[in-house]
Image (cartoon, rainbow, N blue to C red; front, side, top):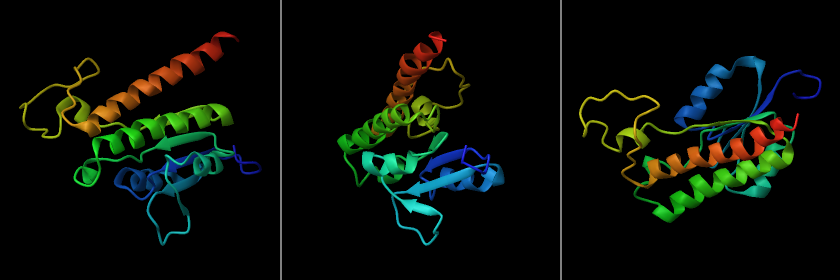
Length: 169
């Protein structure tokens, strides 16, 4: 909670993107959002920063209760970034953020993934399908693969950090 306000302080990555903008719209006044994005903005409430930059993220995470992580390299970067850059940003950057959350005591983390893990880049290629939690992952290029790996990284941090620390209570 932000001292004196009683409002949860939440870091929102990718605040200028489609999902980040939607989160900002529905967040309301019950939360204090610390908004950041890699790109410059005319909006003074959005701080510039790269979620893979540990020093910048440490500054932005200080005093936060939670993170909503919507930033990533995605389909719009397909022609401008290499698979290695996708992995370094989307997986390596996530690990950096989760390590910082552990260090700073930020215990809540929302990770946005993608349906492309299940249906691939061309959503219509496999025809009609029923998708649920039991559907097999079928990433067909680096972006959904990094998101699938991000889900696994999140499960690892949850099971090794949160569950183990709770079992000591």
